[in-house]
Amino acid sequence: MRATLIYGRGDVRVEDVPDPAIVEPTDAVVRVTRACVCGSDLHRYRGMDPVEEGLRIGHEFMGVVEDTGADVRGVKRGDVVLVPFLWADNTCEFCRDGLHGSCRNGGRWAVGGLDGGQGEAARVPQADGTLIKLPVGADDALVPSIMSLSDVLPTGHHAAFTAGVGKGSTVAVIGDGAVGLCAVLSAARLGAERIVLLGRHRARTDLGRRFGATDVVPARGAEAVAAVRELTGGDGAPHVLECVGNSEAFETALGGVRDGGTISRVGVPQYAQARLDFDVFMRNITITGGVAPARQYIPELLSEVLDGTITPGDVFDLTVPLDDISEGFRAMNDRTALKVLVRP
Figure 1 (spheres, rainbow, N blue to C red):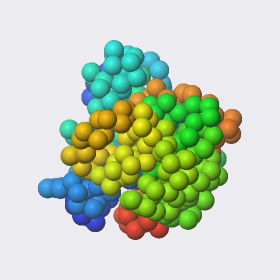
Figure 2 (figure 1 turned 180 degrees about the horizontal axis):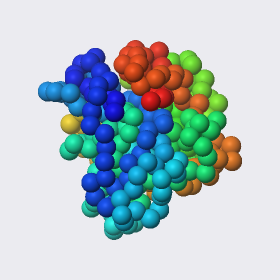
Figure 3 (figure 1 turned 135 degrees about the vertical axis):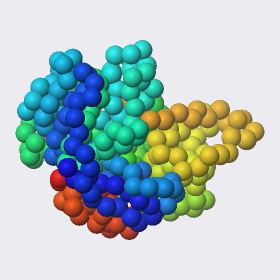
Figure 4 (figure 1 turned 180 degrees about the vertical axis):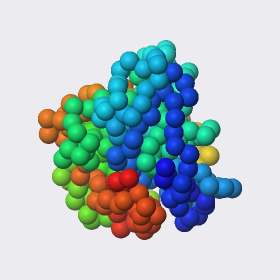
């Protein structure tokens, strides 16, 4: 089959790789019908994570079940399924506590010889715990919104949920990428009254307003902090959702959060150290977030996608065939595309 490999900075190739097959009785093989390029995929594309040789890549996908192991009971051949960005058994004590990233029997895609999502097919471990059977066809009009459930919408929801956003909340969202926009949507669906979106790309912030942002701050650093504080009566926002993952964004979050407020970090961190000094300590700020348990959130979010309550698929503004996925990476890297959908 054909699949995407990354060889380093700006070097993405589609090559022939071995076809996936059942290895464990809990496995399934899924023919991929849609995949995505994630903002975190750009870390290797930009050379931030060195690559010594070609590595499989991709962790957001959906498809049709082609084969199942002897112990798989929840899905069968021909079922259309969504695949979360982590695989998990969904039964261990960590999964039951909503910590699917810590699943005793789970893991990440394209690690340890496992297939990535940006290919024609993939072996799915722990199929019963990982796969979500869909009540729509593989080419349904809702597919873009369903695809957002693989990663970006649950991650945005995780930001809002762990920050304690609720009815009447005032929220600041840092970042106008797909996760940041999904955090805006999530804050709105949880009842936030005021949502300040920090972003500088007009097409994206316009979508953010459609998703529920009440204010837009097209600034960074100290200027952004000052604007957030001005919009919130001088004190800062009680709930800050950091959806970028770099140290500048975290500093902006520290500057823009109200004393006693909460910062939720869901942007994949690109830094090893952060300021948590005495001044931060004295402000009684809660710092939370982390990797989203997408498998836990998907059923609730899927129901609102299916009934049209939310349309998170609007974050996709470019679709490319698998053989042209390098163009999708380039478009996201150059910010000419917000979120890329891939059709194998």
